[in-house]
Amino acid sequence: MIAIIDYNAGNISSVQNALKRLGYESIITRDKEQILSADKVILPGVGEASTAMSYLKEYELDAFIKELKQPFLGICLGMQLMCNSSEEGTVDCLGIFNSDVKLFPPKEKVPHIGWNSLSELKGDLFNSMNAPKDVYFVHSFYAELCEETSANCDYIFPFSAALQKDNFYATQFHPEKSAGVGEQILKNFLVL
Image (tube, rainbow, N blue to C red; front, side, top):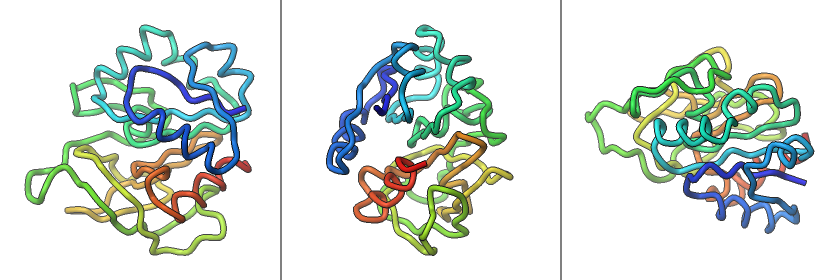
């Protein structure tokens, strides 16, 4: 079973629908026992970082998430919450990845919306894939490049499009909205 963590963020049902299309059942939950017993855990999200962190703390999921041992995937806001901190609401986040989340400068159109190419792919999410691959982004904040970056994207400047550390994986883009490439990335996660 796949547990999708419910923390009052948007985009949860589209992730569940993508999993269903791939033939996988999932539950939307914030129950710790259900999350612990899941084979895989996903933290999707569209929303605002400081509000999202408040909900994770209210449900006592902030420290709990960091202790999970099964494969764990953060998507979009979920990825940002897995970093050290976010400028969105000036909030400390989970600190799983050693990267800070910053606001794109207003040099270009912000938010970064639409299809963009991944480069420098490495790690389990990108097994049997070669760059460049186009995926779908919607975000105004980005995670800085770091040692745990497993894919880059360039919008104004290079940023972390994906991160990996131990059993923790994350994508800034939305694999559930990224057609065949996103489907393959989800499949790669689901067979870990």
